[in-house]
Image (cartoon, rainbow, N blue to C red):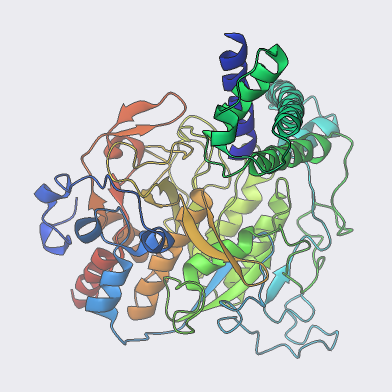
Length: 537
């Protein structure tokens, strides 16, 4: 949700302007003592570097990637390994995408489109996965659902009410500010166009205006500021603010609307036994429902089709599971999705979603335990609130608060930027010495989008599938390793960075060992070497 904040920040800025207001060193790709001596990359990443930076190598490229290319060049080479089924539990996934259509899991026990549950698993015609939310698109946030229920006996009701009041006021103010900013830009654009007698003017044209007209002077000042930003034209800036307003209005009209009813599946979301709902179509409802497609591409986009991007995994099958609407997911859908994946052969589950309230978190933890019994590794994004999740509640998780983990098959991932050094941890990324296991690339990640498109996106939603991809490589090349072993290898084989980093809302300066359990950034090359060592031992 960075765009609307940007709009608000720009508005405030303009108002001020206008009105005066540890592993063994043998498996590290460079000696441990030299890692923090890596030079800072001061030049801007090229487009090629940016599109694959998470696959690059810290030593060779001075970019904190995961050494995926090095792993293929020196370790994997042409070895395909064993096929691994990956369940992406997320929003919709465009399974017809040119980079995903040939890596789909197919349920061989099901006869396509005959309207029968041939394999008796409770899901009719589930050929490539399942859609647990049916035709649902918009949803409330979980704490808004709590308030709408009127259950004042709930121990978190008062907390939910306080959070709601603060969030509603914030977004209402953002709407006012952004709408005002947009109108001022439109007015200034019109005034300058009329003065110059042309619509498409340049920064030089604006700077050349000399006038005693106070209103026109204000318009010139605003346009100079707008054109000094990272926008090619005034129209591009207006489009950005309009996009911010769409996000803000979605928040107000749906996510924070106590009276909105989004669920269209006909089941009781508070009854875990009420099953069989949803449908077999995991595709997007609208094109902008792109999250699952982007996540899937990071893990296993086709590597040899000369299109788009290369996923991390070279021998994986995608099980597409739609459970997350535009709003907060229901615990029931998440729990059943995890069980579906485990029952149908997935060995890796990626979950790039989360929330701060979870009324049936026990259902999800039970499902995590069930997945552990099936030897399934679950990879989860830490969240994008710039909080310590050792302090702030964050679901789903594999522990109650800061207590002991219930299983050893769940790995939580924070996000890195392409900039090695103090700004390496993404400013939005959650962190935690107890509840975040590792960090991996999450900002400016280039991947697939619906309808054969590609785009850069940010978030721990992107760092989780990067780690899931590494987990797939390990399980593919070394299929006898268990889920807990793969988790431990990923944590132990990472690069131990000693450089202090800036984290959180407070922008505090921390060691990586103080904001994650391992104190390391994930490295595919090292992980494969360590996996080999574990197997040989």
